[in-house]
Image (cartoon, rainbow, N blue to C red; front, side, top):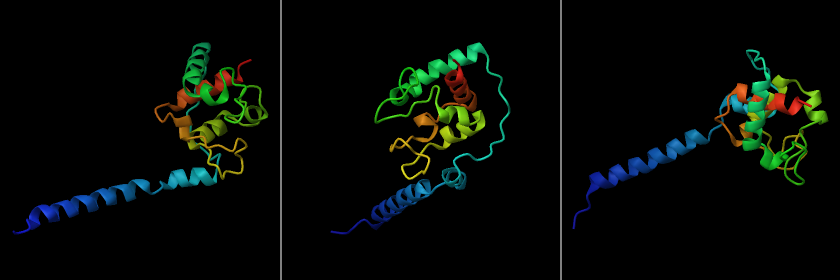
Length: 143
């Protein structure tokens, strides 16, 4: 009984390729690493004017993306997500700072993390554009 070396060798190469791909995908992008050490990096943003329609759009996206942790009214959910609406956090940060924080997320070991839970980058919605997130911020700032 002879061992078919070509298929075995091909299998070994395929397994090594999978491990290499997993290793490469697991390394952190330098920009992501910088964002986690500097929660409010400077972004080059093109200012976006937010209209009433955009604020309504922000409410819709907020309800789909943020309300599960931060409450339907933005007033927080105990042991889950902090209050956003009418909060010191919202009032003391610029739209650009909030956008940067939302994009970066919050790790457990982040000194600014007061909830004790991880907030994933972009709130777990990497499909949201900067304009979408700015519309959410405008919605939360609206009285």
